[in-house]
Image 1: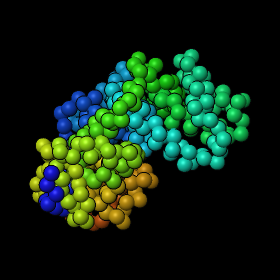
Image 2: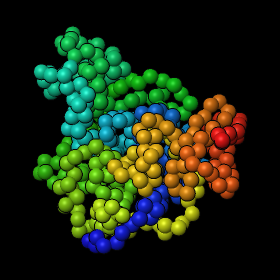
Image 3: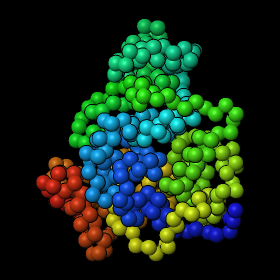
Image 4: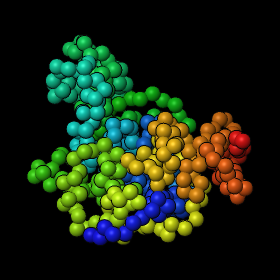
Length: 366
């Protein structure tokens, strides 16, 4: 495993664009794209549609709706304790590996409120309430548990059960195209008709190794800290160590070791990069600890505040918003005439997509 080659920021950025289907739009089916990307962050229900539109040729929102209602993809708490849109197979295979992290992250917010509560007992009670198959909001579930545990308050109880203790799916119509709907939860295994894969009994961590491969395929080359930032799991060094012989290694300009799959695309740094509009909380940015390959440190905060961003020459160069008939772009730096034209053209296409071809109006703030 060679560690001598240094990849500069531009080379890493082009690799990210290629892996994230942002260098060339892919002809992949929606299900294949969601699988390749390791899921899409989806706490804002409409954002995955823009994310897939920017990545797939002739993307039709109805195809994603079909996958959701057909139970091939599912909305559930997973990586980083955030709601992700993932394939049913990945949700079932990965969920148990995330259990400890999910508990720890909820406790990090509600440790005082949940002090003294036996979490295993709370999990059992939560499953009993949900066992009837009736979809419930987090508040409804918490109220059903509050008689036994009155002191924590409904928010702490609900978050712990829904986001950590009991794997659940958020049911459609939540997450369907142009649909506003509250969150209604049912047990993940009952919704998908299959049981969640149990943890490996021998400590070999095949799921951890699978996560490493899938992450590098969609985000590499990357450091172990980047992998941890994506999934939230701290316990993957053993999985990486077990895979060392099948990986290649590089260095970035800071001297960090970057791991990658041998045959994964690493385009020439001078490969032209088209303008791309990214949705809020897109994993192309949030999927790294060191995000400098795609966003300047001065603008790093945009990635965690829900700003939608525009990539120009492979880097975040503007933010964007949309109302009923207009996409408004606010540059973060000066745009050349050629860049202005390219942003306008891609913005017009996005405006048409978001408005069902009723408007292609774009406004670039001066």
